Amino acid sequence: MNAKHFYIAIEGVIGVGKTTLARLLRPFFDAQVLLEVFEENPFLARFYQDRERYAFQTQTFFLLSRYQQQHEAIPNALAQHNLISDYTFDKNKIFARLTLIGDELEMYERVQDTLGARIPMPDLVVYLHANVENLMTRITLRDRSYEREMDRDYIAALANAYEVYYENYFASPVLKIETDKLDYVHQPEDLQRVAEMIKTKLAKVPVQEKLL
Image (cartoon, rainbow, N blue to C red):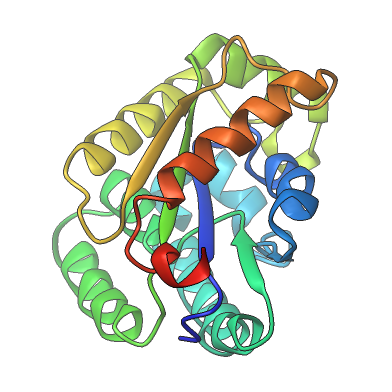
């Protein structure tokens, strides 16, 4: 990784606002933005209709797709710019542990670990949190066709899985931001506040000593 540039990854449950925030933060950090490509997954719509049947196919497609995107894109971007992404490669484990069991989960995590060793880790993970009611409202408002069958229990379970994962995550520094009372889309002061929180956290990251 080029020591002159830093890599911020934004994470959180479906509907929390990762992609929106990544785009809005770009000018604050003079960064390139890397967005996850997820609508190309041919199993995604069927997964939301029958999670047990299509979990392994869906997760495996995402794993390989994310690896293909990040393996070259992150080092290439960091050679020239700071980078903000709206997902981490590690998110595969959160979803897999929620949807897979037994031999399928064991095999999946072996492949995940092998591929993940080749992916640069973020200098900072920004973990966005919101309550389930707000998440469901945001999902409804954006009205993606493949999300219309999504139920509240799944989002609640996913939110809990994220909480557990990041309570035990030490691979990169983590900044948790509560978003229930923030509107960084329509309120410039909220966006400025989030940017300042990230800058303050980055100042404590070793790589940032070289940047400042």
